[in-house]
Image (cartoon, one colour):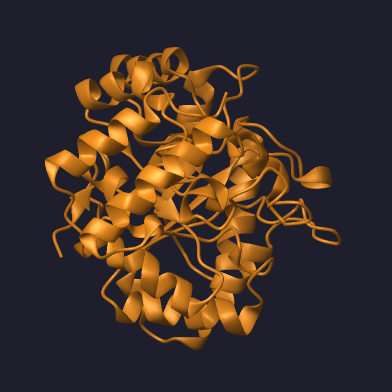
Length: 320
């Protein structure tokens, strides 16, 4: 399996990133361990989480996903050397704070390292932009963490093109670490990234690891009516796709999947993997069987005719 570099960093990863948002939430600890075991056994190595996962769930405070991953690493001697571990900082952690001030970044990094049970984070990402803190201050905080060996590379999530471009320029002008990757919302159903962020990332050699690569599960085909997501964990995130344009896209996805002998989820992920400048899509699984299906996307090659059909059906995205 050919690996792809994360920007200009020395990190090279498999072209599929396992999302950790479900660990300790919709996947309990034993299930999460089984998913992580299968992922590594299959030859993959890129795991993404965040300190805030899964603070939104009743009774959770944040850090649940990192804690599960840390326990898995502790129970699997040698596993840490087999993976590229990514996490994020900046979202509201309640009493623990939020944002991208140097003090918060440094405190949050130590907390993530403790939960993960490791001495380093391979890719540490600004989870959301924080315009209240000068970019130089944020990047200097990361510089100190890199110098201390606690972080290997940094990235950004949920940044628009103007702010990402500014951050890259500040880093270049002042000799600071730069964001080596971007984590945008990107899928067949949400293509807004392509307008301004895609050309910027390709020009500046910034890796891209898109989240919600299956549009919060919509592109698996399991939501096929206006009320199909009612009562589900991701109801609010899926609802915007449950419209005639969304269902028309599913019809095309179904047809391409039948032609290629794959599943709609595999085709949707293979489309992202094939996009220029993409390092890896991020997708999560709540069972080993589901993970096995998703990993099949890496082996699926989309003919140009199939890509053209999917492009046409999803032109502009369907998320608003």
